[in-house]
Every structure is written in structure tokens, then in C-alpha cells.
Amino acid sequence: MKKAHPQSGFTLLEILVVTAIILIATSFVAFKFNRGSGVPEAAERLALQFEAARDEAVAKGRLVAWTSDGAAYQFWVQTERLEWEPINNNDALRSTRLADEVRISAQSVNQQARPLGERILFPSDGVIEPFAIELQGGEQKLRVVADVMGRFALDSGVASAPAKQQVAR
Image (cartoon, rainbow, N blue to C red):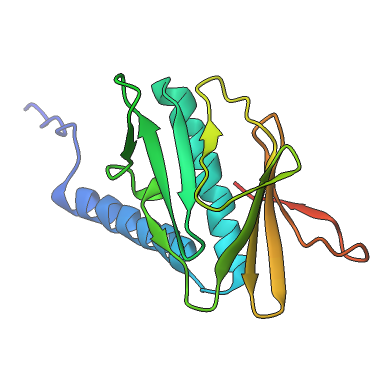
């Protein structure tokens, strides 16, 4: 009498369990990305988006840019025709409107003040010009600072507090 050989593969129940786990994990990531609307949350979200922009520029081999009018910001990609197009196909780099109480109040590149609306560039080689973006809400201020190596940190600008907090990945 021959014994039946077990079938290889996955059962429907196993596939459903794995799908449920993936959906739960994805919802936690989405929740983390959308949590809070204060200055610290907005600054951390912006720093994470800057990391995504740097990575997008390197991965695609194309220049990526960021602009803000103070109340919202947008990421752009340079086309082969050297024109700027908004990035609409990447959720991490989607256009973002800040909460009513939060504004981008200043930006600087190489420690020189620049007007809002001027592009911050993320070249395809990953080496960026150091910049700082200041977010303000009421009395609360935080800066997202970037160094030439493409590292991002939050800076409160208060001498008695720890100067910079590295953004967690």
C-alpha cells in the first residue's frame, strides 16, 4: 500500500494569515506616517521624506527637488527635457499640506537664507548642498538640517537642549 505524498505549497488559510499580517503591518506604517499634526511630527515626517527624495534621486539617476510656499510642500523630478514635473506616483513624496498651526518659516542653503519657493535639490550622486528648513507652530520651532552626505537631523536651535536628533529610519 502506497502512502499519499503531501502536496507542496500553501493552503488558503496560510495565505490569508500572511495577507492579514501584511495588512496590519502596513496600517501601522501608515499610522506612524500620518500621526500628529504638531511641529515635531511635521519635522520628523519632512526629514523622512527628504531621505526618500535622496534615495529616489540616486535610484532613478535623476535630479529631484523640493519646494514650499510655507503652508505646503511638493517634490519634483527633472525630466529628460530638463523640465520639472511634480512627483505624483510615489506616496512617500506626495504633495503635503501642513496643519493650520504649522508653517515652514525659513529655508537656507549653505548657511545662506533663501526665499520660500526656491528649489532644494537632491542630485543623483546623493551628495547635496547642506540646507536647513525651519518649521514653526506658535512658540515651537524645529529645523530639519541636512549635511553634504545626505544625512538629516532635527535641530531645536536651543543651546541647552541636545542640538541635533538623528532621524530614525
